[in-house]
Each structure stands twice: as C-alpha cells, then as structure tokens.
Length: 425
Ligand code: AMP
Image 1 (spheres, rainbow, N blue to C red):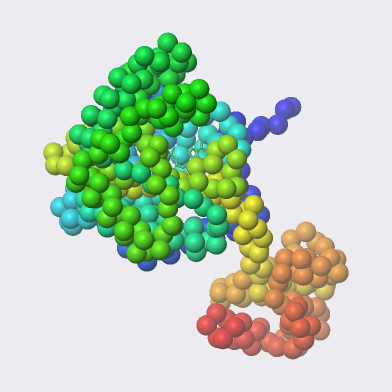
Image 2: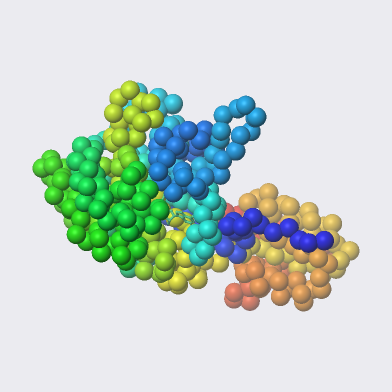
C-alpha cells in the first residue's frame, strides 16, 4: 500500500523545529505587547466575496490562487483565507470595535492558504505574523507599525534586512497617476505578454514591479508616481520618514515600490531579506484607508498594517545561524529504574513529582539501566533519580546532578522541596 503524503505545498513541523517557532512567536508576542497591540484570531475561512471585494479581482491571489469551495450546493462560496487584513477588518466592522475606542491595534500569527506553485519559501499553506492599526490616519501610526515590525526582527537578531518605502499618494493622486501610466504604456502594449496586457487594462500599477527586463526598460521611461503626489501627501510621507529617523529605523526610498491592491494609499513598504533568493520579500504592508468602505463600513476608517512570512523569517534566521542554540528544554528529573519489578512505584513517584510541577520522565521502552542513563543525558535531564529495592525499603533515593555528577540521598518529599518551582531552583 502506498503511504499517505502531506498535500503538495504543505509541510509538517516536527518537534525538533518547534523550539524555533516558539522562540519567534514569543518575541512577536512580547514586542507586540510592548507596543500595545492585542492579539486577534479570525476564522480560517470567510465568504469568497470578502476577498474579491478587498484584495481585488485583478490580483493573482483572487484570480487564481484561492482555495474556494461551496459547502452546500446552493450555499455561498467560501474561501480559505489567503491573507489576514480582509478578515481582521471584517471582524472589526462586524464586532463594532470602533464604538469602544478610536484606535485599535491588533496583531496575529495565522495560517494562510494560496494555490501557488510550491518552491523554496513559497508554500500553499504558510504562516504570517502581522498587525493592523485601525482608526488612526496619522503618520505616527505608520511609523509605529513599521517600528514594531523592525523591532521584532532586531530582537530576533536578524541582520541585513532592507526596508523599502514609498508613497502612493492619496486615493485621488493614485487615480490620476494610473491614468497617466496607462496612457504612457498603451503604445507599447502590442509587445506585452498576456498577463501584462491584462494588468494594463485592470491594474497598471502592477506593471511597475515587473521582473521582466524588457518591461523594466519600458517602465524606466514611465511617468513617475512622485510627480503626481499632492503636497499634503508628500508632507505626510516626509513625516513618516522623520519619525522613522527618530526611531533609528533605516530605510531606502524606492519610487517603483507599489502594492498592487486597490485600497492601498500613502505609505507602502516592503522588507527584503538577503537570504531568500528569488522570493526575497520577507514582509510588507502599508496604509489602506480605502478598505473599510469597500467592505461596507459607512464611515471611512483609516488603517495601516503589515504581514511577515514566518517560513521566510525562519529560513533567514536559519541561514544566519540564529536558531542553533534553541534546544527544547530537557526534564528536571529522569527516573532510572534499577529493578523492573518496581515500575509501579516508579510510576507513582514520577506522578508525585509532576503534580508538584516538576518536569519528570521515565523510561517507557523497558530499557536497561545503562540505556536509561544514556537517555537521561541525551535529552538533557538535570537530575537522575534512582529507584531500586534498597531505595524503596529506606524511602531514600539517590538524586544525581547530571552536570556536576554530585549525588545526594533524599526522600521524595525532600526532592520535591528541593526542585519545586519557586524554590530557587
Ligand atoms: P503578501 O501578503 O503577499 O504581501 O505577503 C507577505 C509575506 O508573506 C511575504 O513577504 C512572504 O514572506 C509571505 N508569503 C506570501 N506568500 C507566501 C507563500 N505562498 N509561502 C510562504 N510565504 C509567503
């Protein structure tokens, strides 16, 4: 019989890798808390329409990458979430969060699903951590979101990341620019491939970051977005940059950086990792003041957010040797059974230790005493506790410190007293 395999583009995360994930998650939770962001969890699937409305029909994600299904024959179409912003904004509006405070700072660590061609750093199920700061139109909010993201990288020790920033102007500026860009590109369109032709019709901004060299040449002569940005938008962008300077966040202004989605405006940003090869974006985000109205909110709700790919962050950290020291913590006590007939007593003692909050393990494979000792050392146990006939009779047990090889003889009560959490151990 052939073995079952994980679905193409998905990965199992085994215990050996969990320490790395937990380490990163811990830093994310800590930094998010420092900045006053609160965790939000939304459903893994949403009505398909939500993503069509928010991400936009012309994007690759909605066009061809969504896992969509219809649970009931005549029911509404549902999609496994390909990103988090839409779901978080939907929840924010549905939950009436605006009524409780003018500004909400939300963050998440979540699994996402996109039907992409799997390759290094690109999976069909992957995870992102991200944040959405909803309700503030101030440039401080943008700098704060970027600053939080960069502090996560810094606290994880990641080096060599490049932050690219750009201003897309306000929603009107964008409209004017798109018109000018389309007029400039149209005469070249006969030489474009089908995808670029389609983008020209529906979303020409996306042609700007094309990887095709011929198209890049055409783009080099295109009207510049910065020439279409209003004075107030320039002023706003400059304030964002000044606050980034204040925070000591390094950046490069990249006039060709656009985010493809319709609702983005003002500041957009992207972080590039030097360790990733072709898929070199580790995260990105920007201001998306237009989204809430698109999702049915009566009022305009300004918002800014980012998302960072956890797998790409892990790849980057691994290449920089930042995950090597992260071994899972061994038990405090490993019970070494000298006489197999005493296994019942060993079970009882192990249980008493655990109920006192002391992480304890015992052999479950009927191994010899030597093999048990080897195991205790291998998994990094702090102490070995020996159980044999004479120990049971005297109720005094050998407790060996596996680092120093010092050995004491103690009752179970004294062992608990010595090792119990909060007793200076
Ligand atoms: P996006 O939502 O497309 O802006 O992506 C934000 C970040 O998520 C990217 O910079 C990547 O780090 C990560 N990401 C996006 N798509 C994938 C994928 N298919 N597999 C792994 N990571 C991804």
